[in-house]
Image (cartoon, rainbow, N blue to C red; front, side):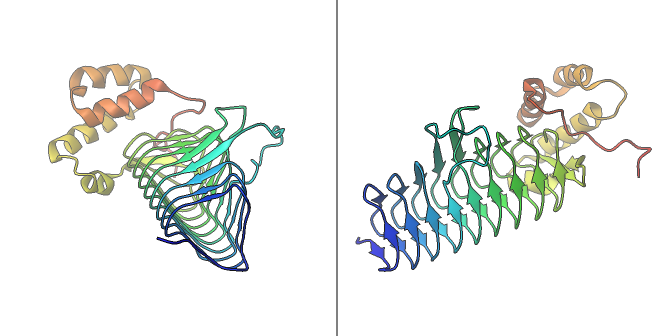
Length: 267
């Protein structure tokens, strides 16, 4: 299959363009870019830096992909941005490569969707099948698991971890880690329960969902601290794979605190 490049676009020497790719008008592709087979750049797309984009990507106007990180500590060191296959990147989306303050790499998984004006900052790691609604803001060094959905206008603080199959409500301000299958709401975001719809979509068995709901109640009931609750739940229900995954997520900890339910005495 041939490559179709509009005459108004600039593809610099050194760029690697996969078979069947289509580059629409007024795009600029830098010399270190690798664009996968059958990728489609609609128009006015700019891709810079050491950026690899997978097959069948669809990138819409005014997206800026791979330019230097928005980090004042960045001094031009080697870095990269890697985006998987079958991703859709809508209008005005920005994605930055990594920095030496981490592992110098930003990674986006397969089959991800980024709606208009979403932002992926430096050193983020994003799993597969993730959806960012319009104007989602992901700060540096965040880790987002598979199948996460983040609602429009939500902002995620630097170094936060968002566990797989969790749901972040629109306009949420996330400043703490969200457990797998969690549902975070509000500004500042609190843990509003489990993402039961997401669990069912993921094919989690009814018995496992029941155990996870019981585990959630014990973990965040407030009757014991989370560390003690983790050990109690591990003894009682740790054989369930979903419960075990949540417990391991909590045990691993991170640079941020854990997102928990809103205290009962708060509105």
